[in-house]
Length: 540
Image 1 (spheres, rainbow, N blue to C red):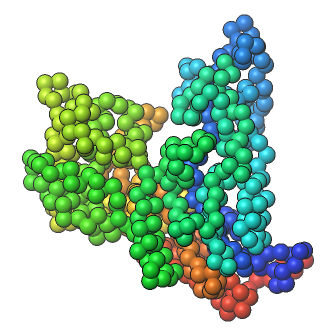
Image 2 (cartoon, helix red, strand yellow; image 1 turned 90 degrees about the vertical axis):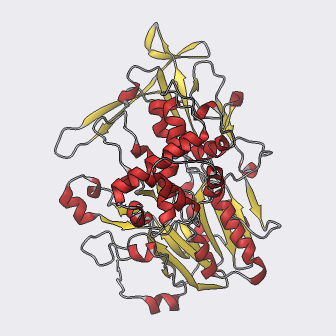
């Protein structure tokens, strides 16, 4: 796990010792990153703000030590970074920089013959007050304190949600998000020499999205767009399409009349419904696969309840079909670039739109020059291919289970990724079957790029259906709190509280996490003392 569950309590809270807070933190950080204190609680999701740009620079042809900017020749800034190699000699990396950022060509072999590319990133451009912001959150007592703490938060931009013991709820998106000149939206490299695409500043903190006690009484954040089209600044455009947020909002609204408990919230967190499937499956009417296994896939999808528990037959069929359907649309046109597109949320949305245009040129396979394919043709082909692959991987249709395809391995992030079998066996845990799916509230995401060759690694062998749905991103912790009962909070992270493989707490939370269960998060001194299994006292 990237998290430790931790608490930081002063036995007597004072100005000199202001901490009384619990939640989760990163190893080595002596604060609580997400959690609650005696007055407020806060959580966060990634805001997906666009805070980086690529600039195409021009070297001065008369002086290679310089680059061109607005008609002038400007010297590259040069620095030398030493990289110490254990058991070997120290290597020195020479980094050139323009006013936009570091030149990537010298450090990325893919750019050896490319135009000069500079990388600008908000996280390296300015002093970052993120640590101080977290410190402020730990001791905040009101929504004003909460916003004041986040004013200095730099990177990465987050959606922070808020609740307090007085019944208020709130939201704030903090972060250093650039204002771009010339209408640039960060979606492609821009010229660096002409000075027409500069960052002219940052979005002022008062202009960043925020809310306090909205009229509907509900705040939801699931990596979806935080503003409508009328917002006055460009934040980004790679949001989650909103199926998860809609599912959470709908569940909260259904509970609004009869009250909502922390147990209800935990049920919502564990929702495995794939919302986009409801827009795809009705469009399969009239599609006629040509194989028995293809027809078995279609039948499984039609009978499916749209949820992805580990025993789900329909989820296994739908995921295999969706991969081959999207690939069937885009592989021929995009070629090697399909690797970075198929399986993305953009590809989901494009596929849904194209299903309403069954004769679009996108459906025609440009590799079959004597045939003009339509949506039904490509969908039937995808069903047949998915059926064949599922049979090869799992056997006859009765044995198609989502959990057989969708598993998580918890890898230790140093030696546990060495590729040395005995070390990986000793340090890693799993694989274990897990519920959820990409795009569900229980967002156990899989990287479908692995179904394609890697142009940067010729030795990589594309994964088949039996491996490609292995989990690469998942909910790293869950927390539910009733602000009127702080000692009743429940929490879970993915693996365990120890980083020592010999320790019994190294991986003892894995089954608890994957089964949707939680553990108590005591807060008061009395509750902490009662729950303590052992105490270690450090004396100066």
